[in-house]
Length: 75
Image (cartoon, rainbow, N blue to C red; front, side, top):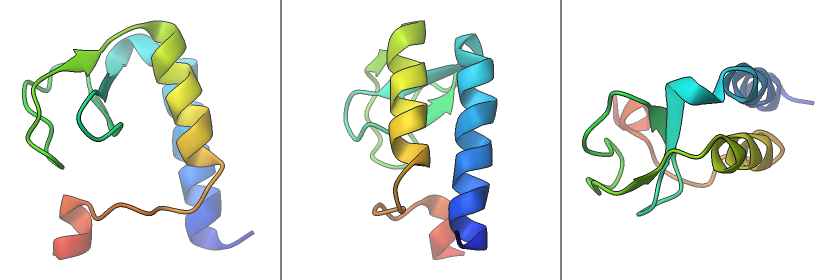
């Protein structure tokens, strides 16, 4: 497992262990902090705040390679 994949899996576990601090963007399926009003990746403003959705999405994203471009990738 590459360092990047290991990092993604650790972040997924962190999110899954505290899902009430996060929500899933309904525009691009990114996971963002609960206090975010607009998704930093796609600028959508609709989110799914359910614990089940956050945990499922975290485990899904943590188990695969990154395919989206994030703000950090542009720096």
